Length: 152
Image (cartoon, rainbow, N blue to C red; front, side):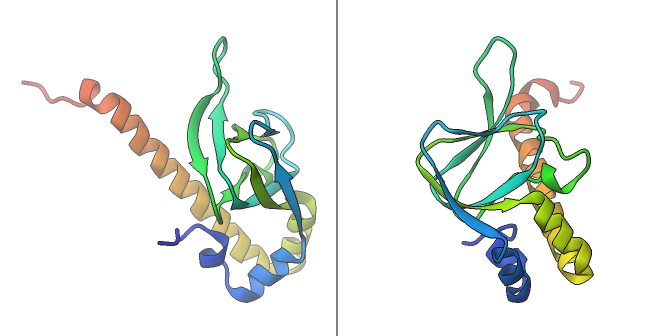
């Protein structure tokens, strides 16, 4: 089943084609860091093959994996919202092939074409909403048995 947040499902063909004109193919070895929390979000990726882990810096520990992303999924949404800095980190869990996009070029194209810009904004918004929902479910899985009990 294809996720409603993958580019191929979320964007109409005309918008996909326009976005893909801005893409370049890249690859990452397993263990490669794509970005770090707090750094400038100047690009984003769509995974072609492999798996990328989104992680959160935990002082004195290894980064905590928040979510894993695979084929067709958008890696990074911070590029779309000021102040354009990463909120998480990301690393390739396996060899990865992806399409990479220059955030400034995509934002400029969105500004030039309101219909394209709206399509990108709705897509990125859906990705953010889906990931927030997934994070909520993971937190409930971790903490609900201890904190959600009623008064007995």
